[in-house]
Amino acid sequence: MHRPILALLLAIPALVAQPAPTLAGEWAGAIHLPGMELKISVSLVGGGSTWTGRISIPAQGAKDLPLGDVQVSADTVSFAMVGIPGDPHFKGRLGKDGHIEGEFNQGGQGFPFTLARGAAPAAAEVEAPKRDPKDREVAFPGFNAFPLKGSVRAGGAHPYFAVMVAGSGPTDRDWSNPLIPLPSHGGRDMAAWFQAQGIGSLRYDKRFIGSKDPKLDISLDAQVGDIKAAMRSARFLPEAKGKKLLLVGHSEGALLSLLAAGEVDAVLLLAMPGISLGKLIVAQVKGQLEAAGAPAEVSAQNIAYLEAALVAIRKDQDLTPAAAGVAPGIANLAKGLARPESRGFVRDLLDLDPWGTAQRLPIPCAVVWGDRDIQAWKPEVLPPDFKGTVIQIPEANHLFKRETRARSGLSGPTAATAYGDSTPMADLSPLAAWLKQLR
Image (cartoon, rainbow, N blue to C red; front, top):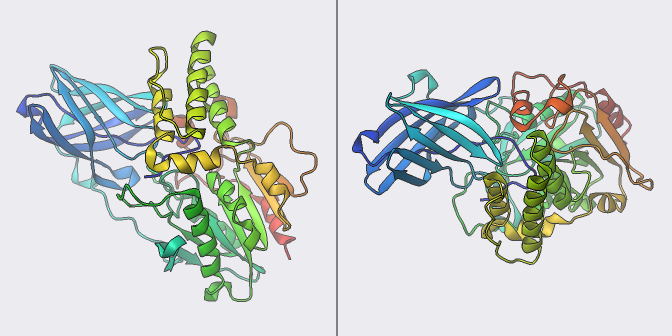
């Protein structure tokens, strides 16, 4: 499973229990996020030293996902959700009141959780996601004929048709991601916005969405090859007949799109990392440490470990064990980036120069950021020789939803509360003006 490159926000984990057989059964509760609760339900099976389990997170459309690393010792329990970015895991204690209370940790951030015995209410049952009736479902062969699925939306009079590439980690064609703690379909919303501008689109699930094959090829060549395959398929769609192709990459997808943009007529890079991925990861972690009020010596130790881990990844070497002063979240981030199945992809993308690559494109190019984006942001200094268009959208977050709170006061969890379907799109008029002048 592909691990996250850009530090995303939240995911979900799994559950464990005490050796007593009474912990087997159904549990329901929540992760307590700032300003909201993320409901979860867990089923535990086992006893002694052998436990298994499953977890459901209705708000994220997740049902009966298997738990991993379930451990029980005395009155403590711990569990993890395997294959989710940021190494999400729970550690809790069974109290005298029969509740399990503890901390959920992912990507260096911790939040309290509670679980009580009993199944979740029937209303919380997970329903299969429904596709928008405005979309037409398609399938096409990707890199090395790997089967890919997507959604096509018809456009109008605009001379371009868009191929949309999603961001990092387990982000599907609609930009839904288990790290986002509420229903969120930013890619689908963006496709609808394009349609309102007269532009049809194809968006597709990345090859590892829904896959449990540890040997699946998720290399940089494979993922860029899938983009090229999507562009070739788009040229044969009736919705794209007579149109030029606009490649739209979001976040990490913008970096991948840079490597495939030689085969289209224009490229739009949404929330593109403004520096190399390696530098961005370090900058994001520094910001998190500062926001947490970490002492200077603690920050220095943690950043040094992270930078050493990135060096090891570049050399395709195993990581050295984290010292006692390294935060578990940062150690887990490093381990996630260095996982064998995705290490090659991370290594090949880590030092890509986005501006140098964009500068060489012989086609119209626009780079767009939201001014409230805490995951990828507009650099303070732009390359003076960049010939493309740079746009910053006021009051827009990473998914280009409206965000009226000050950027300086946002953290990953608080920013995520404005990523949902109930948050309207930001005013994208500056982007609409750029699209109008495409010919």
